[in-house]
Image 1 (cartoon, rainbow, N blue to C red):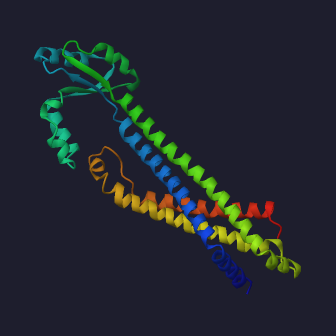
Image 2: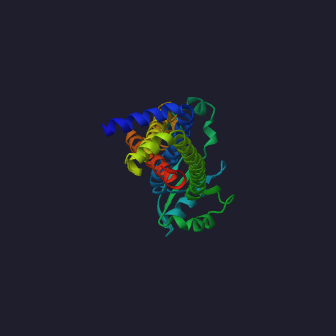
Length: 294
């Protein structure tokens, strides 16, 4: 009987403050969706780091007019260098074939890229990737057939710095939205408690505990948090289906970026849903203890 009463109070409370409840749910959903997006981006960055940093190489791009003797001299220096772990030579034909394979899902890009746009090069793996400066000094740009020496590690540092910035910005916006959701929950609970003060006062007079009179309000907030979390999960699923699996299909198949699997969606969805319920429940409980006399 008491359970039925509590549930009926929850339903009545949600119905009486329908507009504020909807606003609370939507604000919570947006904040949790952004938080989930930030977590997925962080997971993707971690996976990409494992893939790319394990394959960091130094690329020695050769000039268009490099001679056979100059190329042979460069290969000899690489073979005798104590800094070099391994190296491979890549001709223009091989470079273009690799480019076609990597971007086969983007035929327009392949068609608009001339074959001579990709220079021949040596792809060098160092024993210590941090010793890039030594190789760069041994093969100065513009001399002995070398066009430029590029450290892929430096490029990766800039790339992941940009990705980390996007992740941090997403999480920062999520935190601001979460604060707005918590304030809205607090205001909604205060308003609901004020509107039902006569009922709760009567319950206290007949012996109901403070916890028993507070429980319907806490459940209202927790239910709103649950619905907001489920909406956020739905948003993550749509993002994967409509954006990741379609728009990013080419780079993912080419191995340029990592995909997001359904296990990651499920885990992240569970985390943000639980967080939404917990934060809404705690916010309502704190509000009732501090600002409302029941």
